[in-house]
Amino acid sequence: MDTKRFVREKFTDSLRAVFPILGIVLALTFILFPVSPSILLCFLTGGGLLVLGMMCFTVGAEISMTPMGEKIGASMTQTRKLFLIIPLSFLLGFIITVSEPDLQVLAQQVPSVPNAVLIVSVAAGVGIFLVVALLRMLFSIPMPHILLVCYGALFLLSYFVPGDFLAVAFDSGGVTTGPMTVPFIMALGVGISAIRNDRHAANDSFGLVALCSIGPILTVMLLGIIYNPGENLSTGISITEVGDSVELWNLFMQGIPKYLGEIFISLLPIGVFFALFQIFRLKLNRKSLLRIVLGLGYTYIGLVLFLTGANLGFLPAGNYLGKVLAESNPWVLIPVAMLMGYFIVKAEPAVYVLNKRVEEITDGAISARTMGTALSIGVSLSLGLAMIRIITGISILWFLVPGYVVALGISFFVPKLYTAIAFDSGGVASGPMTAAFLLPLAQGACESLGGNVATDAFGVVAMVAMTPLITIQVLGLAGKYTASRQTRLALSQPAYAFAAMDENSIIEL
Image (tube, rainbow, N blue to C red; front, side, top):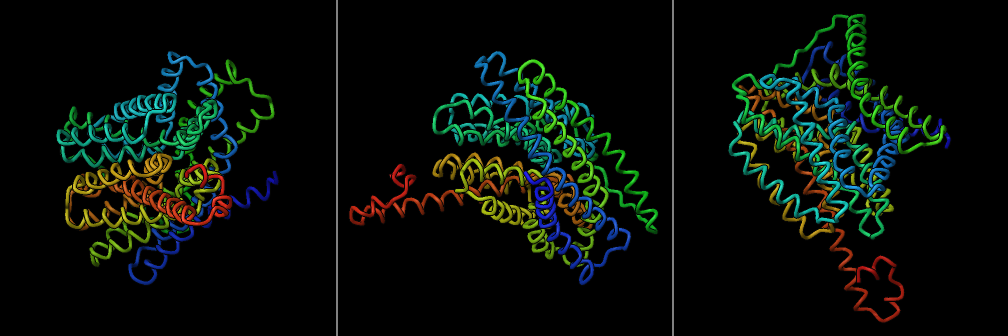
């Protein structure tokens, strides 16, 4: 592998992902909606850190997180002992979730529940549903049936959850499947499917993220019933003004040590878990081990830079811009948010991992570009709906219930691979960029309009996690229709047309 070329490609991909959102915000602030120079400088600095952070993270995910997940998944399943697979799967899901930086951010936004209680509960929910997901793979249980039962139970339970807590509960499902969780869990599924001999094994490697997103929603709903959120559900976003370049430098230099510590603590449990597997089970050679350790270093640096830029640069800019847009003309929020949503999902670190994995598993039948376009369209629609909620104050259930009914209904008519990918993509699309820019944008707009932040602004992550379920499956319906049409045309042609059909068409026929 040409290392320089590899790193240069990742830098180009990162710049291509972040540049559109930078351009949109700069165009808005210079032409239509002015912001203070302090916020603009923080935003531009944060954008630079995002580019470098994404580059390092994608390099690290490719050479460490993905191989780790695949090897641990294959090793666990090779034992073929459920009494070992079940507790190890739960422990792995618990550790990875505790390691998720986005969960720390969510915990700080819900002061009515102690941080430790929220984190442990959400991690337990992910652990339980990771076990369910792995058992589904091992026993080849159809994905749509499990999703129908789980989401049916969630919506029934939602009627007993306080209204101020409902949107936060659904947001938690998207937030906890972030840049730490997704690469590892998806690779874990690939590793487990690799030891199965049937032709559906590769298809079943998807769906783990989808089921793991359900656990946090369930546990946070239960916490909402136990704890009384009252009026103290969310904390305000503080915007730090910087007077000159020295203060700007100090702001980011003071933030980096904080994230160095947080990400170290986040990565430590995964590193320890892998080290134990290496000692007692994997026994990789020195070259493979050094490659994984180097990749963990890249992942560490990438997440530190990414979260520093997102939280110190993008978060205050998003909040302030939301206020300015709402004060000028609330209905402008809808097209602006849709435009931002289309491009901002491309900057999500975990989206890169998902798109690349889909392209590899399907041998290019579903390209990374096609996945990216479908996700962008879905997120764009979700942001438009989210802004309508903020302006009108409509309950989130009026959007989520019909949306999931449509998504679950479609799942019985599309190839099951598309269903698993679609429900995985919902959790992947709602990552740190959504939490650090779009959610503050919604909060700023809601505060400016005098709405209830708990019921109206929260729920953006949940909306972003919902719409890709529909757009990806519609993509599957289109592919199924095209294949069916080709088959009908082939049947209507002379015998030589049958001989000209490719292998996949003959199998389908």
